[in-house]
Amino acid sequence: MKKNDIVCAVTEALGSNGEGVIRHEGVTFFVPACLPGEKVRFKILKLKGNIGYGKVEEILTPAETRARAKCPVFLRCGGCDLQHIGYPDQLAFKAARVKDCLKKIAGIQIEVPEAVASDLPYGYRNKLQMPIGVDKDGNTVVGFYAERSHRIVPVESCAIHPDWSGKIVAIVKRYARECKVEGYDEETGTGALRHIVVRELGGKFIITLVSAKRKLPSLDYFIELLKGNFPEFTLYLNFNDKPTNVIFGKEFQLVHGTGIFQATEQGISYEAGPVTFLQVNENVRTKLYKAAIKSVAGTGEEVIIDAYSGGGLLTAMLAKKAKRVYGIELEEEAVRCADALKAKNRLQNMTNICGLVEEKLPEVLKKEKGEKLRLILDPPRAGIHRSVLKALLASGIEELTIISCNPSTLARDLGILAGSLVEQDGELLKNGNYTDEGLAGYYTIKSIKPYDMFPQTKHVETLVCLARKAD
Image 1 (tube, rainbow, N blue to C red):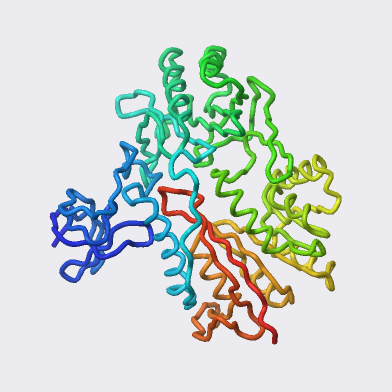
Image 2 (cartoon, rainbow, N blue to C red):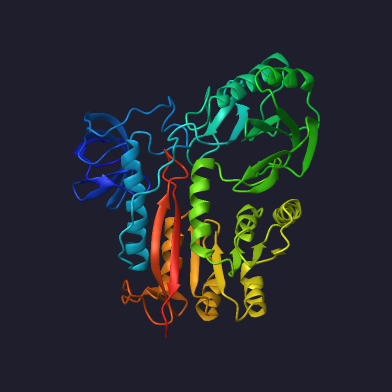
């Protein structure tokens, strides 16, 4: 076998990214859009040793559970991975992915329940980010990047966003065409329009047009086009002329509207602007946050530390239920947002700290020694810093809650906290001693539950509650 050969074989399983796993003539192939039990024809794209990658050419015997993808550019666009899988099977797949990561990475064998469903499997995202560029003929295009590239796949709308996504695309294209404003060419650094970013907040829209030029022609016309489709919106122009993958530059110019909108979530009033972080699936966010709060706040006498606290929304919700709450966050702007949230909701028992969790957490633990401490951690994809994990093991905190967006780093972190992974000469090795009862001096997993924050994609949020095993 060699590259570009066509192979017929049967899919055996799903890989961690939702791709089909096919074993043929001693080679394990990973082929997107194939389901277990399906006989397929696929083209070999890459072959190295006993591992190969392919592209499906034809599904010869479709699985009964195969779903028809709603998006015409599914698998061409780099956004969705699972539109060919029926939604109930997506929920089971995500639970299996978490379970497999725990077993393979940390040696933890534990049952993981089916992921908590999103009420909207499609049309759930409240935030849209789309690059604007030029095609090979020099025409302005709006769409999404193909996987592992900066080649824009043009789209008319997006199935995992509400219907307003199509209106935004049409407006941007019309503005570019009629006002002769070119999309940005990354190779030459020419053109103006780089991204369109939209956040919906209770039927109101925060729209940001990112440009490589500080001034754009006929913005009044762009505003009129928006007015015809969006009753209440605010518009920013963001200047970014740097050769970078970062979407926003530092300069924001308010062009239309108030600049911010207000909203309420679980009794907390907050304001959102163009850079405010909010989970993109409001329905699942509510379910996840309610469960997280319940896990750490019970009697009202708890002192809760919210590590990696972002803009402070969850911290503020916790403050309503606890004796005192600390939020620790590295980003200065996020901490300023958290302070504004504290003032707006008159939360005197909420303290926001700017700095590295690994540096600030020990200070708070020392200050609150003797209190009924609880800790919730919502780390980035890279997971919890090793020094934080060590501090937790030495802290004496009885209960922890982790919200993770990455099953692989979650497995590593849980392995260290549960004692199934031990550090030896700078490497993590499987200890092999993890049990449901837990190891003395470590934490045992009380509960674990995935949440489908991102339907139609391989991504999953996981909520884990841990309790310390007495020495």
